[in-house]
Image (cartoon, rainbow, N blue to C red; front, side, top):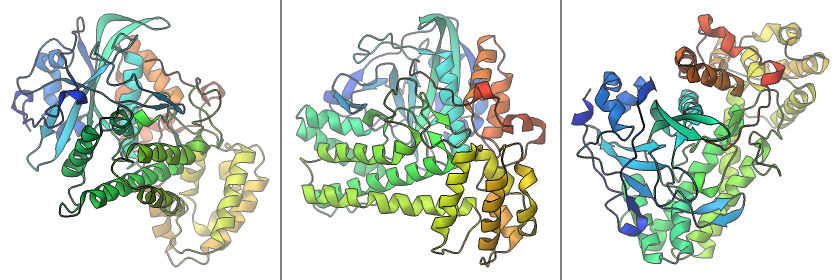
Length: 492
């Protein structure tokens, strides 16, 4: 493990032409201090986690000191927001500080969120608040713990700098770590501004640094076709993972879509409590465009927008063919995820009816999505038909649930998988813990009073959500009525 000053940087993106963004230094926060650090992310960077306790770490990532190998850079991109193209966006409160290269050759972007004004801040102040920084910090850990591709968060830092939102809040920074910060909107920027040479340069950059398995001997059209197919594939698999764990992103604008299929830009997100397929977590989403059950459709819309931005590089037939692969890839990945949640190895035609009946039952009975599957993961086959009482806390009327349990029991009789192996598979697939919004809110309220204990407790369960953690089991309880279906604002 290295000291912060010993990290090796290879800043490839900021070396691109000036049309890709702007160099700018972060603006200092007053009296900064560390809130929390994620040792797992620190170790990914080969950085000694103890470095977070040094004054240099705190000062560096709050704009009060610098690193000779860092070249802070605000990236320019655009995007479709709620379906409307917006040319006036970019890194308005964040900076790509540099790219760390590990001893294995792996590169990680180090991005500082809440770093102050940039040329793309528009009417904003370039700041982030403690509330939103904690939400992204926890969500990044939660998704990684669920084995879903995501950006990561190294640390949250806070300060005495006042930031004015609905109320006066503490200014904060989040250190985001990702394989890449390239968004669909980066390509849209160069397309809509008619910088087609830079569009090609961006595609070449993406292939070189992130899709090196694409044969460099292919002609350009074939290379870019392979690139777009990979983005379609990665996006479909990401959405399948979201839908299977009950994750709602909340603001799937194209500038929030990663070309690497990473869950990106955690704002007004939420996990399902009771199973409500039309769940809307963003209180600004008046039309339900980004509702939970709309995410697969929206992702395809976003991919189509990206495909349109690639028309200077690809033929329409190539784009259409790649987009046609989205639904089959999504369905295959989602089916595999859901079969694992029920411990099914065999593929039978009757399974469609089993899943349909399950979702209907969950919806009509208002059953907690996560707790249903976790409870199911502890019931031996021989006890299924008489296990309805185990779900009494989840449903007022367990009659429909008992009927479904009988169907499920009969289906398991056709499985070759040993029952103990089935239960092991289910317990490793169905988490005991998810990041419920009311828990995040409680952690934030404690943190705003200077108590970071709950953040650390949540991090412990979120990073290993399939383990029991008996001493923290209260985080796995069904949420109180006031804590369900919280809608979160984009304000950050």
